[in-house]
Length: 111
Image 1 (cartoon, rainbow, N blue to C red):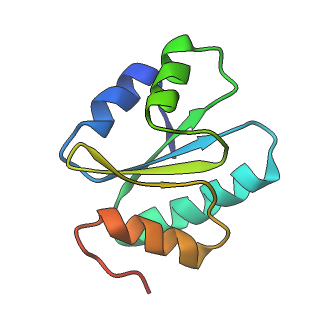
Image 2 (cartoon, one colour; image 1 turned 120 degrees about the horizontal axis):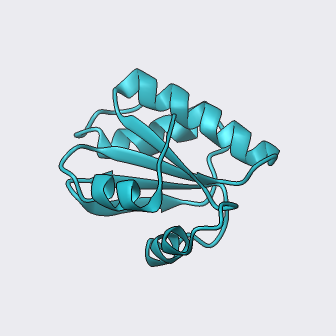
């Protein structure tokens, strides 16, 4: 997973390539689990995963996450062709991650 800053997130989220972004907190087991499941699903399906840390003191990132409707972490944001197509508050297991990532992978059906 690649960590991105607010400018890179803004640019990548508006691109033509499918993208999954996960907003996390440091030292939070639920966040670690979500990252692990999303990374596995993204690797299987071939979609890029980027991460942002909500604990960083970045006013631009806070405003951007607010614009995207992130109110709790871990949160998964799925972008396709520059449009936010899904926002999930939690990813409990690999099957849920596959279903989410499959939505932005050009119609690829998750197993």
